Length: 126
Image (cartoon, rainbow, N blue to C red):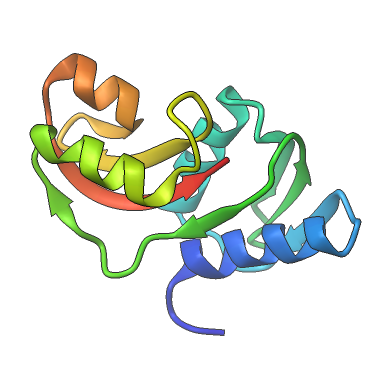
C-alpha cells in the first residue's frame, strides 16, 4: 500500500468489482476519501458507505460502476482546461465524472464548469 489513501481505496473498490464482490472494507480513511465517496454516492457509482469511527475503517457497497481511479499527478487546471481532461479520462460525454478539489470544496467537473472555477484533479469514475 502506498501513502495515497484515495488511490488505494479506489483501487480496492475497482478490484472488488472485477472479482464480482459488491462489498469492500477499507481500513484507512481520510476526510478527502469520505468526500469522494459522497460524490460517488450522489452519482450512483456506489450504493452506500458506512464509516466505523472506532476501527477507523469504511465499508463500501459498489453500485453502477465500471472504473474508478485516482488521477496522478494531481494536475491543477483552469476552468477552460476541464474539457481537455474530461476527454482524456472519461469514455463519453454523458458518462462518468471527474472529481476536482476547488476552493469551494470537492465537486464534479460539471459543477466546476457551472461555478466557473478550476481546481486540482483528484479522481474519475464511470
